[in-house]
Image 1 (spheres, rainbow, N blue to C red):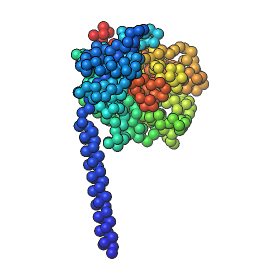
Image 2: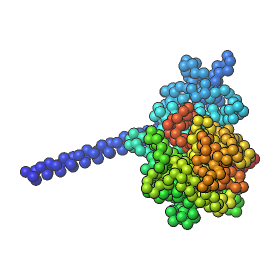
Image 3: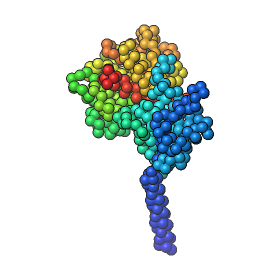
Image 4: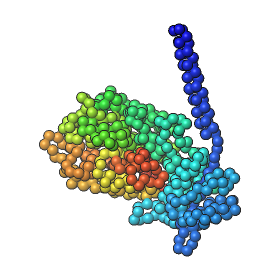
Amino acid sequence: MKSVRLMHALCRRVQHTFLARRRDVEQRRHYAEKCDSVIKGVVVGVYAKEGDRQPKMTPSGEKFDDRVQGKITDLIRETGLSGQLGKGRVFMNVDAEFRAVAVVGVGQEGAGFNDLEMIDEGMENARVAAGVGARSLHLQGCTDVFVESMEYAEQAAEGSALAVWRYNTNKRRRDRTLIPKLELYDSPDSDAWMRGLFKAESQNLARRLADTPANQMTPTIFAQSTVDALCPCGVSVEVRSMDWIESKSLNSFLMVAKGSCEPPIILEIAYCGTAPEDKPILLLGKGITFNSGGLCLRPKDCLSMYRGCMSGAAACVGVIRAAAALSLPLNITALLPLCENMPSGMAAKPGDVVSLLNGKTLGFVDVSKAGVMAMADPLLYAQTIYKPRMVVDIATVGYAVCPALGGAAAGIFSNSNFVYKQFEKAGALTGDRVWRLPLWRYFKELIMPNDTFDISNRGRGPASSCIAAAVLHELVPCVDWAHLDIRNVGMLTRYNPLPYLLKNRMTGRPTRTIVQFLFQMACPDGK
């Protein structure tokens, strides 16, 4: 009887395994069929009506309308499309080649730079319209999406590539949303289109790194992801472990890292686009892959979003990948301190004090504000070793920038009017704006003097972003410097997200603005 029962059990197990394998094969076949079937769609634009004049199609839209014997014009009239920016319709079976046609409003014809909004509206309108159209066709199941330039091929590429991107690695393979292939429609400006795709893909890389769950994006995994992303582009990446960090006495960084069992890592990244002896621009990206707040634990309701506290480091990786893809003629060095801020018996305690490389002491008054602690010694080390011509640090450090600016613009602090003006111009061109916040002596007086140490990481008062910038400013003695506080724009988008980004997902901002800034530094004449 035992042998009979055992044989029945084995038969059931074999049958179960066979059925499971058959289901797996069917799922793979379904996914392959889903990938192999090509469904084309096209995005065309229509300008907003002005006065009594009816909505007018873009030049490429008019060509497509002629191709389909005026059907698009008739559909615009019947559906009442006004050309309002970002509003449109998807029409099916209008053309034999393209199953779906997205007609999207581009706003006013001839829109240019708006001084009050500090943005080039023509470029941003192209991003919005292309993004809305591409996403609409994406949701209709199109595998190949053709997008017209809307007179700005680069910006149309950015908007459409950002809009269709999804982080869905942790979904079952058959349940993933496939990202369509993007092509330029009816325009010879393929170089500008490719530049736009490069910039968008760099931001999407930053989005992926920041959106990955913390257990799947530890410092070690982040380092491997960076090597995989940058080394094929000819970029040098050095991975520094605990022994090296201790030998360089980067004690402020180690004070944050020691609370976690995940080993800390520092990445030294070098992109050489000109003569090796030319001084580089230094990028420093805060890379706390999960910031629980340490012993000052953060509220549980929003704790998961603090996987995005390495958004600064993620943006740096995306920026350097774009710089390599665009072959920018300048040297860039990046230093990325990677660690976790966790509570444990080894964690830093409120009130601990550390001696910095410049001889000053820094008090760790609030261990939940670990950003400036993790960046302090790496910032001093990088200036000494690389002797950069300029320093740009990107970090999520102060909450105050969130109620101050919302998701509209990153906060920027700088000791150079020239550097700020270049960032302001870059933000206006990319649609990812920055807004200057004060770097006054008033805030330095809030971080020192103290009775038992030189500098406080918390300071006094509610202006947390300005206080954090004042601490970092103390560590930059005489070089041009800009500090981008991206706590409000680099993490989750909660309110009024840009139409080509996703709500409640990591944004990857302001990657494209930094890329544009570096382009302006490399090519001052704009060529």
